[in-house]
Image (cartoon, rainbow, N blue to C red; front, side):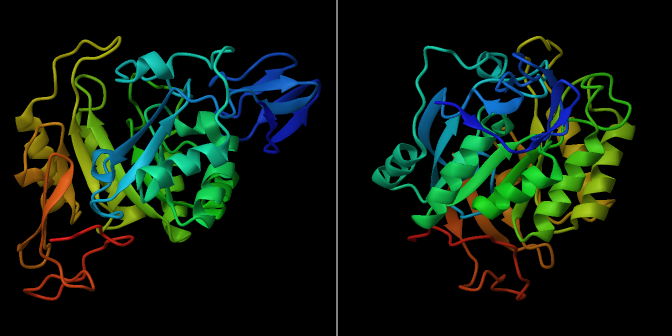
Length: 339
């Protein structure tokens, strides 16, 4: 199953893909960087349409989403390939692969039916970069929205503006966006990291929910100029109430530098909160209940406690306010809380 993608333009005897900001110029019979879009007969064809590498029901908190449909589950699915190829990628066995010819496509309706049968509240494209499944996502999320399922992505956020807008129109309301680095980083040098924040801001302007994820990679994006740039961009472009997850890196794939020290993460959290006034800063991949708990930014009351990617304590009022001081806590979607 293959499908034409309309986001492209012709350039002489080649075409330019306009799904992501790589904007690959693709010759006849060739594919772009992500290995999922090809120039066939002068048209952009999604050769990876519906070819999935994984499908499973997962808690929304594992994405991580801490302020989006809390304690719900989403049928999570992935394809093959990527447009970044991070040397520390934990899912490199998927992201560094092209869609296998022998793998059949799963129709959007079948995927949505699986989510409903499993009792999931939503659908989530994750594991590898969702841009590789773009055309398929539009169909999946549009159908899911009609059947009462939310739609979200775990993404590097490198879509073109038009592609991003079409995703939101189709039913995507949640974006967990990885910010990989900053200007001057010595890896991923062809990526314009400013465009990631541009897209996050555009998603917010279109009333979608955004949470940013900064994986602190040893000797890659952990230097002072880099984290200060990330925090500054977050504060100025996205605002103080957009959650920021500062996560620990572990050696993986080609990157064999030591794991991020917990001390470094603690220092970065303090800087983000005190110097850049970001209200909701979490530390991930360290197994700390304290640093995955939501506290009221005004009075400090413990509001949402998480353990094992599940909400185990919920102390907000019905309209998502702190019961002590009345501060409004940004929560998108209905929480699945029964206690």
